[in-house]
Image (cartoon, rainbow over all chains, first blue to last red; front, side, top):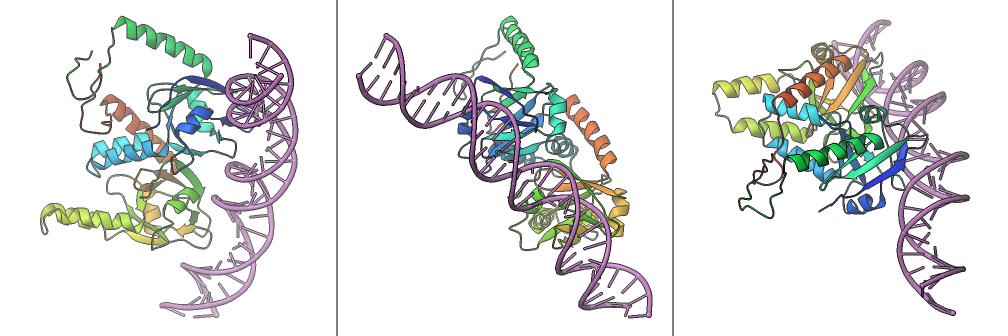
Length: 156
Length: 156
DNA sequence: GTCAATCCCATTGACGCCCATGATATCCCA
DNA sequence: TGGGATATCATGGGCGTCAATGGGATTGAC
């Protein structure tokens, strides 16, 4: 299973290309589609990214919802039309489409932030601000993480 | 299994032809019928499209509904009589019949919007309006996709 | 004979592929 | 332990190819 941690800041060249960090590429090496899937986050000024298998599992998830139901409609309309397949070029770069750059306010640098199973692309300053705030909230609210499997690890 | 994501806006030429996006065509490459199947959505001002295998799975779905029941009647009447097979020409284009154009209010451009297992054809402005609304509804209702397996990941 | 649909070919513009460079980290051996 | 050799990675740019589009020619139906 792919694991994404750490943060890398890379340049966007004048053609709109960015190198995907080598460690992230390595995590995606076994995928059938060599590239990433990215879509604008609902809540954040960032792009959420992962490999194609992750997108497939999202699609799987939507097939458990009745076709033509309002839930199915809203979900598939919110997720898929704005998601983009971004293939690697020979050097492991992707092209960031205009629409995605606009959403994340990307101009000439992009920060790749690992999030565990997936990762995000941020404008570097926005990411710093967001991280600081998230860390503060986590401390304030005494966030805990359940360990292991199905035992009850009282979260809140 | 075919995967349709992302949105592409293509022109309808004066003969009524549109290029089907290359990525969508690639997703349909293994189908026996080289083209798409399209029918007017009974809920949206759009055409719902996919390969022939998807149409077969829809038929499968209707067999799980009691024959001669009102549901069965309504579904099969809404889905199948107006569905059309649209073959690709040598350049990967299809011809949009008059009736389908009328339903989706298509004139000179068509937006192909991926929906996961299938895709839709919209008048581009109508699609934007619909997406914005769907995204808002999804956020309002906190529609989230359950991750992976049957464990409940409810965090807060 | 007329109209429409299909096939074929030309254009163009974006994108993918390739190579070159520089910087950084890693390795090897003294 | 230090310093040089080497591999890897990020970055920049040129060029070829393919996808989208438009128009003409051919075929076939009515």
